[in-house]
Image (cartoon, rainbow, N blue to C red; front, side, top):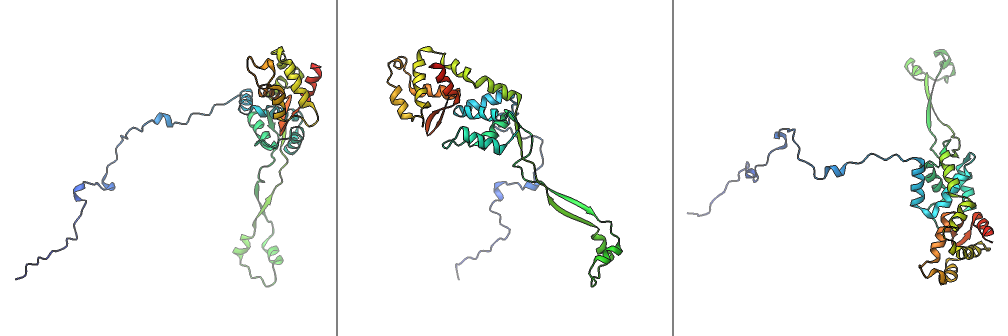
Length: 277
């Protein structure tokens, strides 16, 4: 007698039967939902509306090295001008080959802050408008205009009565003009008086400013290293310790100096040196 046992496979066997897994379709809806951890921190706050002055102050504070260019954009827009005209003059007056903020980006930033306002719509994609033209031709006129071999039915002629044409309209160049708030901010921050007021903050440093201005007013300007070599070892700068960069930053903040590979004096810088002499 054979001792081999035979087994029968149970097709209804469920290995997860004891896991008490409930089918989603059998789950009842409940009003209660478990709390979400830190739910209050995930709420997006309402955007804060800044005034033009607050937005301009924030812009200048964010990129102080570009203050003179920001303000110059406002000055260029005292009269209505296109973006191309502003960008061309900005690059001519303050060339920037080392800055990530090109002329067009600078114009956009000043516009977003409210220093200048847009009066047109340049650089927007042309709006494609569909114009519907309804013909007033009768069926007889359509039949007359159709080729002789045409055998168009009445339904086809009715479909031809309304024709849609796709046309692209040209947009006018966007025009910019300085806002009243922008002009007020410019007048407060730019001018020979503003430069001289800064220079008089601490009169003992006037000889330092004068020497720096003389170097950067020269043809070709002065390199950073040349300025450091001439200024940093001055006895007056040892206590308290000051470096040439401190004075260069001050001149740059009042738009008297501009850096583009080398330091050069602006028109305001030349005027300030003439006043010191």
